[in-house]
Amino acid sequence: MNIKDILLDFSVEAFNLRNFVLNALLAALLSWVLAQYYKRHGQSVSNRGQFANNFMLLALSTMLIIYIVKSSIALSLGLVGALSIVRFRAAIKEPEELTFLFLVIGIGLGMGANQALITTVAFILILALLYLQSRVRNRNGIDIQNQMVVNISSRNLDESQVNASMSANFKNVELRRMSMTNGKLFMTYVIAADKLDQLSGAKNQLLEADENAEFSFVDNKNMIG
Image (tube, rainbow, N blue to C red; front, top):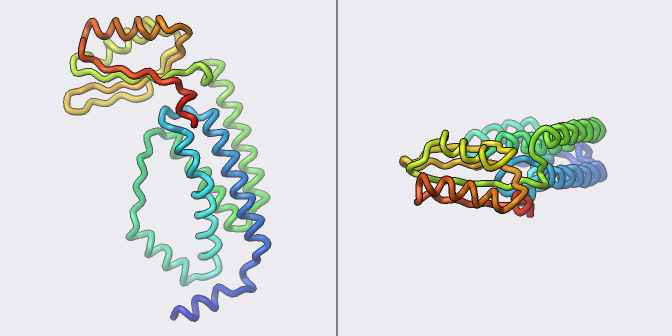
């Protein structure tokens, strides 16, 4: 099959411009709503605002691909061949990021397949369940509005010392990440600090054990923008 045959296969009759525009607008709206939700209620310690800004582009790109290939077997086979040689690499640091990406792709797939109603209903249901889950999590754990992210790195401290110090100075502590690189320990916590003295107390306690330890305290709300 040559290029002319492929273009004829993707005929005007098979393409409804009105439906395409409406589905694209709806995909953009749903991905924007999801981005706003992720910025406000996401639990990732990375920059949620920067990550969420890609949601709309990903949804619309997925929709465009599905719209093109669904009307042509030749284009579908070509897409499989192209994806077999193109490798997408993304620094996914949190499982939550991956689940939100799948949801965004699902929006694009649904709109590209012209299944606007079921996609919208499923999106509303999923978002409602996510919101209820976040409310329960905040009630039983750390309220996102009071969160701070604490990064600690040291060559002389071990994880038990750091955990003991954090638990002693903060009421709510969640260990989010721990790694060892070239003999240096890196640990990331999400904590709820009511007073600045708590931060100073934890830092001074760890500095007594390792004067070369490094710290950073970041208000989690600053990661949204």
